[in-house]
Image (cartoon, rainbow, N blue to C red; front, side, top):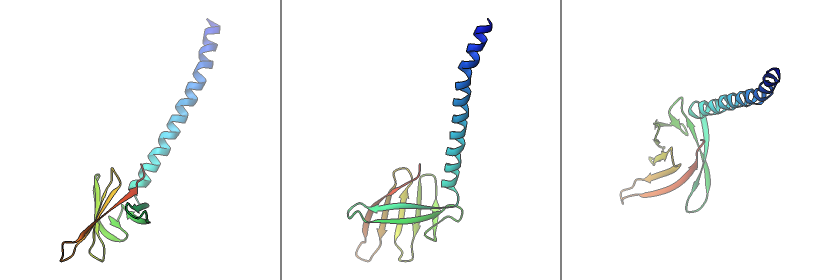
Length: 117
């Protein structure tokens, strides 16, 4: 019976370490998630046609994108810039749609952004 207890103790040590490691990873992931939804985050986007890259800065605390007022929900972020272009970022897919309004009907541009998970 004494031998059985020693074996159990030896078997439990790795399990305790795995549990500690999992708790540490969980805390790290939680911290990264909190950072992603609070404060300012820079996101890299690319034009699907030309491949040209650019960044947008989302400030979740102030509800702005590149200092422009934005509507931020779990599903999308939308805003309008000083040129009166309308932007909608789908937070699940990373698809960014830009609507350029004009008297002749306007244009749509489609970009893709790399979002933090």
